[in-house]
Each structure stands twice: as structure tokens, then as C-alpha cells.
Image 1 (spheres, rainbow, N blue to C red):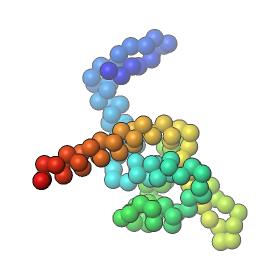
Image 2 (image 1 turned 60 degrees about the vertical axis):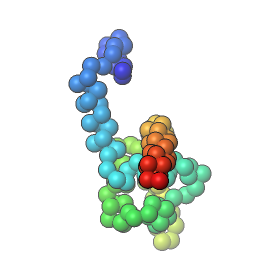
Image 3 (image 1 turned 30 degrees about the vertical axis):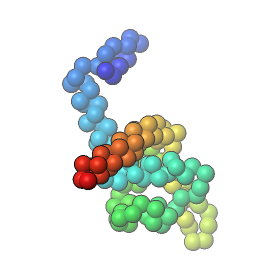
Image 4 (image 1 turned 90 degrees about the horizontal axis):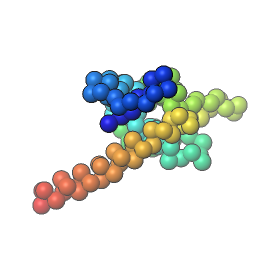
Length: 125
């Protein structure tokens, strides 16, 4: 069960509060691409990541969708967008410290996905 701190007192969240929290999380992180973008950036904190590199690294995402998702992730303080003083002007994207708090979520999903893929393979044959 999740914990909530109210007025300095910790208590167990009730089911409704947990479901609201899950909805809030899915509103910010949901969809096909956001977690993949965050994971990509988290795995490359030592690199300069520009728009085209992101688009090439995340198979199947269109430029329009990537732009939309990056704006939403920036608005939710999960990534930064830094305009660089180059010619032509380039923009670098990076995960924020707060954005790194999503890593355990993506790690759990990656591990579950690996296990699930294997389970499906086993069931087929």
C-alpha cells in the first residue's frame, strides 16, 4: 500500500487515493512514447542528445509526435530543452533529476517485458 503524508503524519492511502495517483501518473507518463523517450535519455546522460538523434534512436516515432511528447515531458519537468549557441542553432534534450525518478518504473517495465516476451515464446512452442 502507498503512503501519504498529511500535516506531517504518514498514513496508508486508501484505494480511491491510489487509483487517483495511478491516473495522475498515467496522465503524465502514458501513451506509447513518453516512457521510451525518458528511458532513452536516462540511458544516455553522458551524451548530447538532439532531436534527430532521439528520432533515429526511438524506432517508429514521427517528428510531429516526438515534438509533442518532448513538449509535454518538459512541461512536467521530466526533461530539459537547452538551446545551444551553434550555427545552425541546435537543441539538446536531457532528463532532469526529477525525471530520473521515473527510472524504477521503466526498469520494472523493461524486466516485465523481457519475462513476458519469453513466456509468450514458451507458450507458442
